[in-house]
Amino acid sequence: MFALHPTLQADTFFIGQLKLCDVLLNNNSSYLWLVLVPRRAAIREIYQLNPADQQQLTIESSLISQRLADYSQATKMNLAAFGNQVPQLHLHIIARHEHDPAWPQPAWINLQSNPYDKEKAQALIQELRVVLGLSS
Image (cartoon, rainbow, N blue to C red; front, side):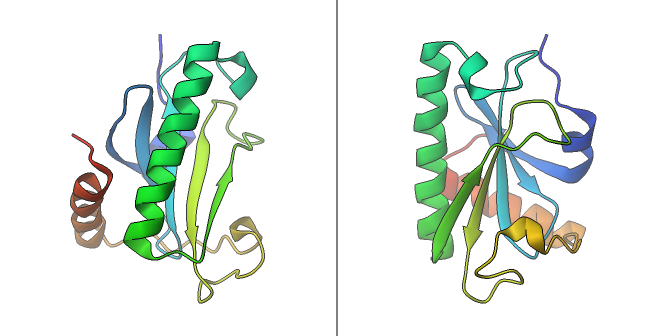
């Protein structure tokens, strides 16, 4: 049975669901940083997904990346599936800008925690649901 890893649960806000993935907002306002988590139990790597799910993950990550890039006018979109500390398969999608704290280095080089104010987070989540075409 699928359950969101406790670290992801603690560090993100739920935005909505796609066919395969939950879409989460990383609680670090230094970056517009989303996380896609396929709702599949005991999967650590993309290659462990069945071929249909692999294809669906590609479709969903491309859709979210494109909509987030358009919304944020990103200079570059960063996508990564590390999982070194959180073993559950999850895909980071980060809208990068030349003015962000780590530019042009990877965002994880400068991971200073800058949590969202609760009201700002809720307003952003509502806006992203519309932009990304998600239901809660």
